[in-house]
Image 1 (spheres, helix red, strand yellow):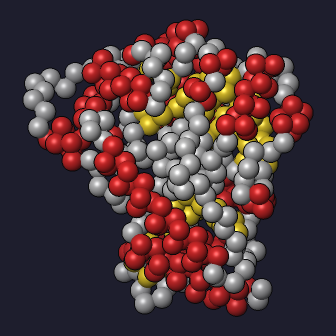
Image 2 (cartoon, one colour):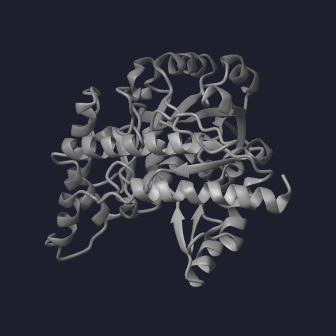
Length: 391
């Protein structure tokens, strides 16, 4: 099981805090934005007498809320039977991979990609076949020829994160249409991780793989409430498919793990009620944070950061020799006025860590004042580290 690039430096952050140093966390996608009050109230005010099992596919009240939400997105053909509720998007991804793949099978993923895809595939001895995108193009989808070359008899799926984690890249309808043709041609499934769909900027709109009816039997959507409603601890997500065969197979795994979290479903059902004002407000806040962060990062000599179109992450290239060493050094040896900053080295988001050796992922989940201070610390740390390393 590979180590998490997001969490493996946590012990060094803990030691820094024990020494009285304040650590600004830009390493993890834990928003500081309050969870909807409706969700919090639903947890506090529930009148449960028995904290019982939920249905394996998720309780009907929550699946009705999901159906209503997806109908509002235009997918009016979906019924409650198209949803399997899971313990976070992570379990939905596990269900998808274990449903489609046997040991030794392959999934194709454009990189850099969400690091836990490595963990999920490793669990089932499934091999990741990565196709590199470039920071110079803002991490746009690699040429279709690159996908065609990698497809073998063992290829079972293409996994996308749209908008992307760690890059914030937003796939276009044209890009997804090309992938749809490849999926149909080779009889493979597209697993589309769409947990950040509400947080897209500059008037853009996230295109769901559900928009391609020809993929009825070749598409799985992964969704989660963690980032949409800033309720990561609720551990509620879902797997969505129009394919009866995929749904039936995934239900075997859902039944084997018994049920998704009951209180999380209660909170998520409440969060979906009258949520548009909340989502618009949060989107506006993330837009301001993104604009500020990218501008400040690109003002640092030697730093390059393409402007993401979605999610709340960006990948920046730094003028250092090894960002994993640099990130650990900041926690162990750097502080300014009793403060330091924590970032996620990008090597862990690539199948070949060398490709991300000079890059970091930064999550703009802190308020603007904290972001300003974090980038100020980062600039001072880069300068000090370059002197120490004689770069």
